Length: 227
Image (cartoon, rainbow, N blue to C red):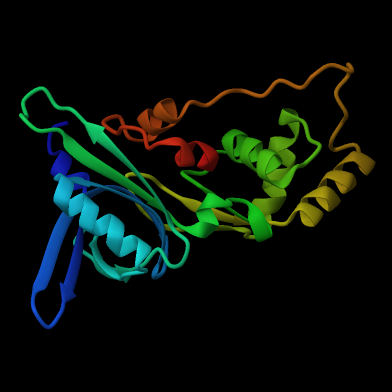
């Protein structure tokens, strides 16, 4: 965990009323965003600060986010965001650290409307996610052929990220089915040789993050769907 602070972002929330002003700053270990739209926000701090940020998320508040490279951006999770809170106990601290994971409505329904957000882009992992989210009848061996088409058509867009390298794949179920059909007709793709259940490789969230970020730690359930 040496120099971990250099890989973290900083979230600032300012609220001014007639009677008082509030300023809260929390460290960010994971973030996925698209311009001003935040899709995933993972922060940690004390109980009162995390509680205030949770309330602000539900109020559709705007936050100032500083990235590890020093750039800043105003972001919001928008309407119907979901919040998940947890506690992290550290051996050298008397009080536990509170953790908040906030997720946008779009990310909560990841894959809908032909938009799939991933923690990172690896063909095998991306294909498994697309097949699952879009409900495709597909085989793991088809990953390279179909995703080469996706890449050639520039359907992959890099998103803002902290602690991950997120991408957005813009492809609908209908488009994918068309490409699969073309591949089968041209025999670039083949049906499985035996009529048995198809077995997909498993990619635990912890392992995915460790591959890209050796000092990283996993986010909860919602990130599993991203990978």
